[in-house]
Length: 264
Image 1 (tube, one colour):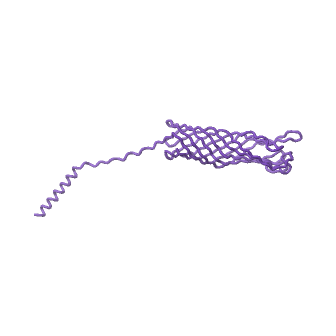
Image 2 (cartoon, rainbow, N blue to C red):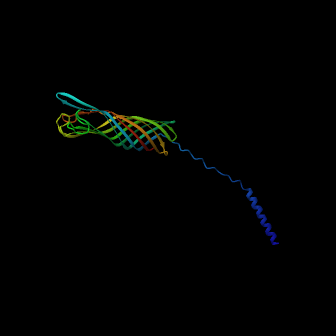
Image 3 (spheres, rainbow, N blue to C red):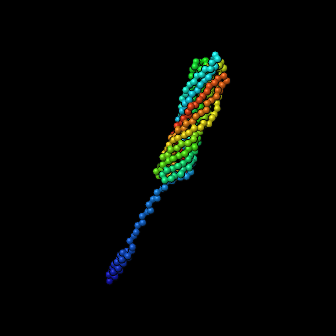
């Protein structure tokens, strides 16, 4: 008799459990919210650093002037010198985005140490880089720094922008001229000397270039670019007693490739 009662209770409990599960509402599943796309806005101020390489060439003319037997003699010579170096510096600017167009202004300053030099004759009887009796002259230049203020016009696709840039440029150039005339003087001067004069001037010109800029994050960007800078130099006066060597630099040109990193 006990066995039948226990079996009836167990069966009753089983049916009750089944009924309770059937009465529960169906489980619902909620989808995770879609990821929000990051909006890249180019408008705002930025500041950063840059590093790259520079290739500089200078072209122009030098002239050695002397008086021989009452006549004024000249020995003009065309010169072209070039060299390369690394450079690095800082920049800052502001962008304003209108639809996909980006308008901007930027200023930069870069340190470099690119050097150029050549040696030349004094009069037509001398040798370019050796003192056979009339001496020779060595001309050297070193660009200490470059700076520019430029406008920028870009076109942006989300986090990538291509742009053109151009504006005013400045360069600090140190120049030295050495007269090595220890045998019989420079030309027909009979003034034996080995003397160097040095001076510095800030040259003004223009710069133009283009680049592509990428936002690595909404606050960091990277921009490889290529620029070209051109400036003119003043005509130099005579330097040594009884020796006149004039340098007229027609054009100074620097092509630079750099990568910029900026924090917006």
